[in-house]
Amino acid sequence: MKDEIAGNLKGVGQRIVDVCIRCGRDPGAVRLVCVTKTMRADAVRHAIQAGAGLFGENYIQEARDKCRILAEYPVSWHFIGHLQTNKAKYAVKLFDLIHTVDSLRLATELDREARKIGKVQNILIQVNIGKEASKSGIDAESAESLMCDISPFSNLSIQGLMTIPPFFDAPERVRPFFRGLRELRDSLNKSGMMADRLVELSMGMTGDFEAAIEEGATLVRIGTAIFGERQ
Image 1 (cartoon, rainbow, N blue to C red):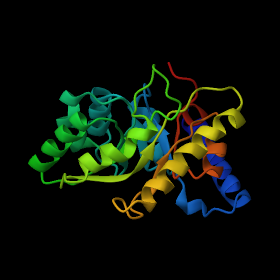
Image 2 (image 1 turned 60 degrees about the horizontal axis):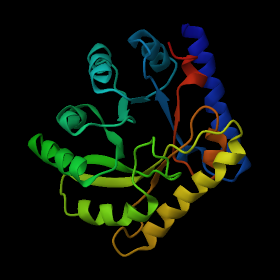
Image 3 (image 1 turned 30 degrees about the horizontal axis):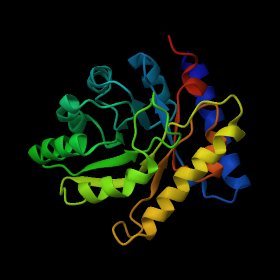
Image 4 (image 1 turned 90 degrees about the vertical axis):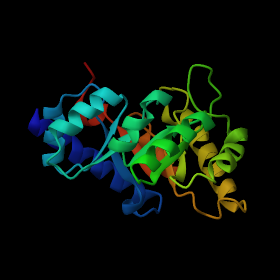
């Protein structure tokens, strides 16, 4: 398993570099988030030893266990799953970036819990770019309003946007949704409120991350291509 993960990680890293060069982007502007949902701590350790330093978790309890087991390693943890308000106090202690803030209620709780520990919590606003009833996230039209509501919070810092687009077998069919998120980010940056402060675009997974990078992704969330199919 160790050699397989190392080989997969190297391959994904090279694909990221290749697509960046192809579309004229700096490879250093795209970060790989290794998605470790359902993966055992040993698998994560193998990825760390192969050079990975950024990991994405979907569930608080699973993340708490892995963070404890792997505490000796100076890696960064991102939360990429749906976050319940009552788990905010754990999230601010564990994660450097929370990708999935989609309501004022959740933001208020995160701000309150971050203030308790003297932390400014970095967050992304999750946008339901495909307007799918089955997915979390706010409509693109509501993003600016939510950011206005969050902006007074001194213990939250909005870094950018995140999306999980509709699933298609062909990456080219997903491309318009990635483009839409980038255009939304750029539009918000031109507004007086954000003033070019939004940098991150968290979009793209194993099947479509190359298209996402071509459309401006700065964080790609990849699990299967590194760790194999989930149990």
